Length: 281
Image (tube, rainbow, N blue to C red; front, side, top):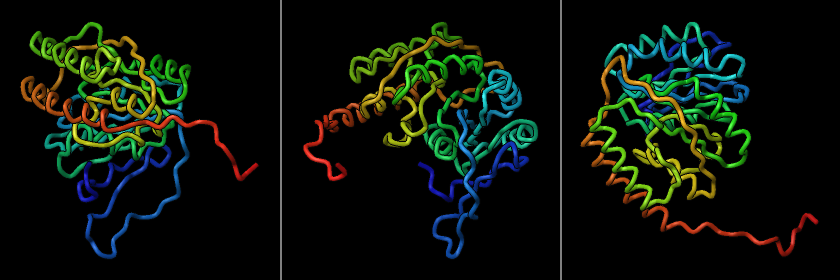
């Protein structure tokens, strides 16, 4: 997870729409984050991790706003150390949307960006989606409704039924999903889909590590939560280039798969009986 000196101040936004977020560098004597009154909770926070996605910022923010019209929400973008025009695009977008922007001074990875966003979020429910425009924000209300209907410790995971990726990418994902399902038994056909909805409190109880975003269903089940899948739309990338290569992503996923399997087997979740005595009675 990113240390404090990897976080930079957020883009300024009008007070009713967002809030800046800053941490002092670690080890700096006498420097602390400015105290501020706690912000009110919201029903929903949309967390979007991005790196070098400048041309996708404005279109995706507009789509999120259109999809969530009538639902009180905030959008939390986490810029994972972009080197292109992403910071400027986020500043421009923050002028007209309920947008909060956090920035890692150096790239720490997608999972670290998701953790940063969820920790800063004000929503009781969290929706995550990728910042490349391939996930469709119009699916968020349906996933949120399913999560609210299920209640409790629930993860609603998007399932890209018709993927708009290259044959190589689809094939490698199919292999990885098959191996993962057999080893982790996470009851999820498409754990790599970035579109998910879950309670903020549930996520904060999960172990945080690099690439954890690929294994959220297995981690939620390990905590005693439940996982359901919902079919979602998937679109081709029309702007920018992917930050992932097919082979390196597959290799890292297989390596992490072994680690998550180890975590599952090392944790025994206690089953509590009714209390024998309660001093409050």
